[in-house]
Each structure stands twice: as C-alpha cells, then as structure tokens.
Length: 499
Image 1 (cartoon, rainbow, N blue to C red):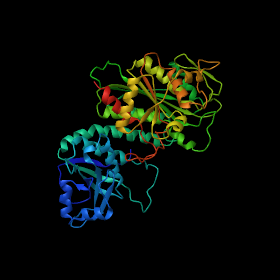
Image 2: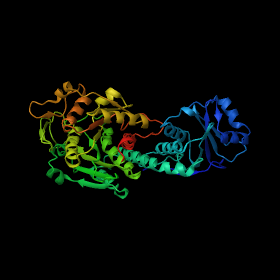
Image 3: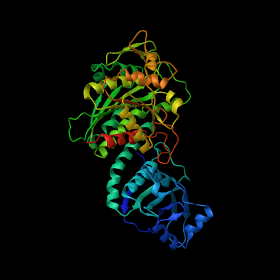
Image 4: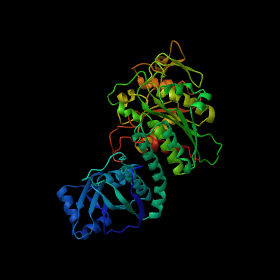
C-alpha cells in the first residue's frame, strides 16, 4: 500500500506552521477561526478572494502562499457553497478535493473543521479524513522519482475539531474501509508477472491477523470438488488455479446464515484460443477486479469489526492459449452437473463464477450472494464508466444496492433479466452455452450466471468492467485501479445486515 499520511485530531487552534485548510460558505463567508486568521493576516484572505473572484462555491478553492504576518507555508480556503445542504458523502469528496489542492510536499497539513455556522459535526470530520486517505493513494511501486519531482504527500494531517475524541473514534472504522479500497487498488494495479494465482491467494491469507479465516484450495482439491468449469479456464496456463475462501464471523450468532460475496479473479486474460486483439491487452491484468474487491471488502469488514457473518470466495485462474487449453466447441460438466458448451474461450469469467456460485450455495446456504466481475465489454457500451451493471433476481437486494451506490459514489444501474434473453444461451449440444453472441452481451452473461443460482436464492451480479479500472478520476481516486465495490458492499452490509 502506498505511503499515506498519519492522522490525528485535536482541539481547534490556529497552527503556526505548515499548511492550513479553512472552509468558506457561499459569499464567501469565513468561519470564526477563518475570520480570526484573516485579521491576523491583515485582511489578506478577503483581498485575495476579491482579486481571484472566489465566492465560496462548493468545491472551489483559493490558496495563499507564504501569507503575511504568519509563519504558515500556505493557507487553502475550500468553498462549501450552502454548508447547510451538505449531504452524506459530500464531506468525503471534500476531503479528497482538499487533498488535490496540495502542490508539493508539506510536512504538516492542518484542517480547521468549522463553518460559518459552527463546528463541523464529528461524523463529517471523520468522512473528510477518510476522503483524504482515499485521495492520497498513489501506485508508484515501480517508478523512480525524477530528480526535480516533489511528491504530493503529507507527513501528517491534523484535524482541528471541537470533539476530537469522538471524531477519532468515528474515523477508525472509516479508515478500515478506506484501507480495504486501497488494498483492492493495489491488487488491480499490480502486473500479472508479479501477481499470479499463488500471490493473489497469499493476499487473501494476509487477512488472517484481522481475524479472517482463510482456506485456499489448489487444483487437487478443486478436482475432488468437481469444479471442472473453473479448472477448464486455466488449462492453458502454467499457473495452478486456486480458490480462496475467506470467512468473517462477526455476528452475535456465529451459526447464523452468512452473506456471501463472490469474485472473478482472472489474473491475466488473453482470451485463450479465442485470443483477444493485441491493442490494450495489457489492461487484462485488471481482469481480477471482482476478486480484488472481495478481498478488500473482507479487509474492511474485519478491520471495523462488522457485526455480520460474511463469506468471500474468489476464483483465481489465468486464461492462456497453449496445447492444453480448452477449445471452442468443448463441452464441460460444471460442479452443478449442468453441461456448458464453450462457444468462445474469452467468455471465461462466467465459467469461473458458475462453479463458485454452486460451491457457495452448497456449503453456506447464504442469506444472499453478490458476485462481482469485470465480465463484459458490452456493459461499457451500455453504461460507460459511470455505473456498474446490476442484475438481480431480488428486488429488495437490488434496491438496497442502488441506495448504497448513491451513498458511496460506487454507482450501479439495474439492467433487465428476461426469458427472451435467456433463450439466447440455449445450446444444441449442452445445457447452456457460454455466450449468446454480440447482442445484449452483458445481459446474456448475467443469464448464464443465473442458470447456476438455485430457486429461492437471493442473488445479484455486478458487472464492473467499466468501473474497476481505467474509469475517469474523481475527488477520491486518481488511480487506474479504482477499488470499486468495497465501499458499496460495506455500506450494504452496514445498513441492512449487521446484527
């Protein structure tokens, strides 16, 4: 994980060094501490606002370098707009926005957490700090800094707030969730020659110190479990296919039915015999974004001691072409007993998920299953990079996921499931074929998965091909790998399933 600032919380006071962030409402209208500072600076903030036409509009900023009559390096004024209209999540984005205003290294960043109408509530302060933590992430593991480059990092962030102990205690669980997001980003950003199936399984095993039980199944165990659909995908790879099962037992009743999350972990996808075009194939190191999210989520749940029983299952394979690779036209018997005709070996993620869905249902009888996968390019055609595709057989689960997406910014859009689409994956030679062609590609992929969901099992599928990597940057993420889904699913659990 990237170097990140150290956070602390203290009572309000004007610092004497480093960079100070203050807030201004529309006007601009400074907070009491901001007005005190402006007087100390001889009115420099007010004059600068007039010259720069800074009005305090939300997510605008004004900087004063080496302000007069003070030993501060810089004062940054962040616009809040109508401070009374700030909603949940806005403070997180404002934290990321504030971090983005830093240019160059500062040893100490202080934030005066008050508005013109009074102190920022501890909940908002904690969200602001979490936004900074998310925005501070950079994946620079393989880049040497240039001689004239100054990294944008802070040694420490001090939040000055009326209730520092309360804000600090509220920040801790948010920090755990943020770190789950950053873990998922790390996994997606790693190249496939570094992060293979064994290394990915080790990343899951690294959750054990947090109290997560982890079981890793190798090919012998998978063969004995008859997970032939998953194993077929990795036949052309020199890497052993694996399944990692993570269990967090945080519920009051340890025997209560768990919630379950399933992730596609294709550590690199060439397309197999149905090989992909060379252009942008390097992006296929990110075809394990679903599995990365599940590992990050399990970290988040354990780090904040979520009061829920949760199962995370990831299928780790590499899809390569060689003399042993599966071919178009092959027929595979899945763990469920359903036979699959392989039409296209590049429709491999759904074959991994099919066996995982069967395993999870047989073993754990979960309250619900959410699977995540960078499954289809078709979902990018439909939704671009703003929303993940949501497919579900359960209206309540779907509505809860949609609400969680709005609250966290990990947005999802429900797509249709219908018999007319399901017919497109009927096979002449097997129970189902693994692709229905170009038309409605993301929908037929979801229908393929639905064939492996038993009657009465609440299930949702998230196609995150457009959001797991390469999505447009925002206030809290400038990384190629976004960590999409961790905050979404943590919020789903926190709002509805903790007991």
